[in-house]
Length: 113
Length: 113
Image (cartoon, rainbow over all chains, first blue to last red; front, side, top):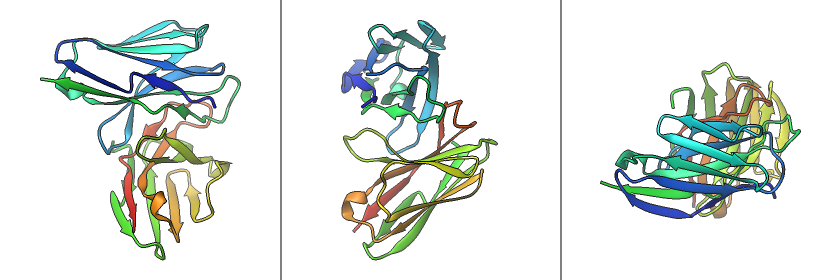
C-alpha cells in the first residue's frame, strides 16, 4: 500500500511549544500534502511539497521532504490551542495523473492553553 | 468550508431505507471524490469523477451508488446499508484529476441502525 503513516499517533503539548509530526510512505511520489481536520469536520489543505523540493514554509508551518528516506515532517511553531486537530499526510504516486491521494491515519495534536 | 457543501450533515437510517447524500462545489473544479472515514482507519477513497466521468471505483459495495450529473454536483445513493457502514462521508473536489490539492466538504455523519 502507498498510504502514508503519521507518527506519533497522538501528541500533547503546551501553547507556545513547537509540534513536530512525521510521515513515511512507500513508493515514489509526485508530491506530498498535509491536511488538518477538526473533530467531525472536513479536511483542510495546509501545504503541498513537490518531490523536487526539500523544504517549504507557510506562516507557522514548515514542511520538509526527504525522498531518499520516503519521509516528511510537519513543524508547527509557537503552537496555539486552536491548532488542536488531527493532521494527515497524503501522497500521490509518481506518474499518476488520476489525482488519487493516499492518506495515513493521522496524528492527533492537542495543544493545552 | 463554503466552497464545498454537503447535505445532510447528519443522517440516521435503518438498514432497509434508501437515502441520498448530496455534495455541491462552488469552486469551478472538474474532479469530485467520495471518501469514507471510519474511526481508527485511514481515509478510504470510494469514487472519483473527472469531468463527470467515473474514473475510479475503489471496490465499493453496490449498496453505494454514486451519481454525478454535472461537474458541480455529486450524489451518493444509499440502499440496504449495514451497521458497519456508519461513518463520516466526505466529499472533495479538485481542479481536475491532475492537480490534486483537494478541497473537502464538512461531511455527512451517517449512522445505520
